[in-house]
Image (tube, rainbow over all chains, first blue to last red; front, side):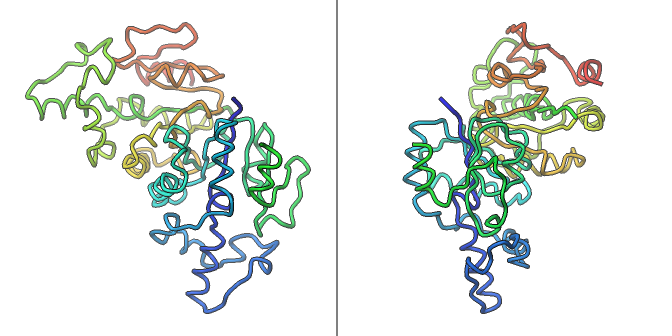
Length: 171
Length: 171
């Protein structure tokens, strides 16, 4: 069975929704995702490090549309591993595991990976929103669209805009 | 630079010392490592699941001899990743990262991996005390001697009895 490494933040967890909400609570300014296209996450959200260090940030992230239903379908056809860059934010480790257990109960502990660099990951397919993770990966790569990556291009990676796109290509 | 995946429990962290101590506190019986050779960890310590779920178990584990000094030397010659099967015990995630930060401050967050199955790990060399982790690995494998593996043989894996042995073979 082919292995798929699926990212969390920006692929399963809608962290932009969280960032926009926290930015609004701090500043009163409600940003629109469209206005953030082409900006890195650090440019779009000057206080992003404060946000991600806030207890509960990862635990309460909303889901990206259709991710539950289609990941469960993927999980029947492939061996799915959730691979999340998490060790930069030690608080996030337990929150991320609890979040996965709540929203993706069909993913058992054997198929969760919390790491730093993803250069050590071996699988057949990777789905991620960051080039830094996809560029070193040897298998097939899918770039999940998020505002920070909309203006970037790498012909090696197949761009997908939604989980419906993933369903179309992989199921 | 070649990548090495180094296990924690039984390679850096002396979990047998912890198990023996907790067994003694419960039963009054002081086990000797020599008497545990050939037994799985579950056979040697009937209450092992209770032990590993005890808060502080991983945070207070003693170091395996010479691991600090020789891992630091390895870290100059190779790209060292610490790869620990941790997601089975969610409490352990934060404890393990804090333990690494304390005892191995030269290992940054980018080089820590907390996972379940290690079948998703890609590196050039793996050092581990469990066959289940080494058997699927495609690179060079070193089996670190622990009582549970003393009676097992797999010609593919080079057995090392100590960090001095690792220094001898890899530095």
